[in-house]
View (tube, rainbow, N blue to C red):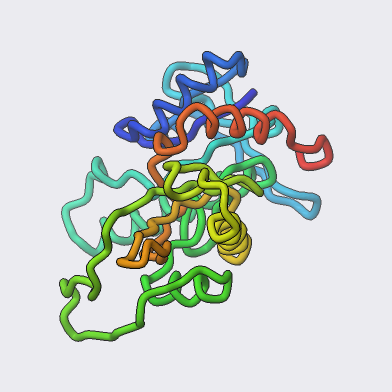
Length: 252
């Protein structure tokens, strides 16, 4: 069984689910964090040799984590909208407990998940702009001058001529032709730097925001473990299918 875990309003994840289904990935389930946490019965085992869970979903189906072969994990946060508490303190406590439970459940799926959860993000680490910039510079991507301001709404300096949304999945880079398909050495080096950044971030799937400056050089502007997958088009879906079905048996 394969899963696409996402919020019901995540259009990019719904697009990926439909694309994987059309490519013959079966059985493939679409599952929301609301359904995972809203189970009518659950068993969560944590022991010396690993962890697993069994949950009865709201529609009556049984989900056993040990039967999952691959996951596209798009869970950004635990759903808190329906918490029935009168005080902020009680609601905050319940939020923390739900987040901890969801993190523990997702960790059971981590060996076969794209992306894996961690302590600072349920679908990969969330970092500040400064942290991403440091990692991008270490990876070899050109970065804008770092400026620290007391005004959080201040726009970055510079006059970029265009923006390219780029996806990295494993060793592969996907995005607009201006970001990856020009046959010259500079663009090849940029693609390699994007892959290095994803490695440094510890994530299988990473979205990058790159801008062309006045000299048509790609400059790093930001990154996210929850990118818009649609920018990768059909080539990205083809590779995602290979990635999910090519996980080693030892990891399952």
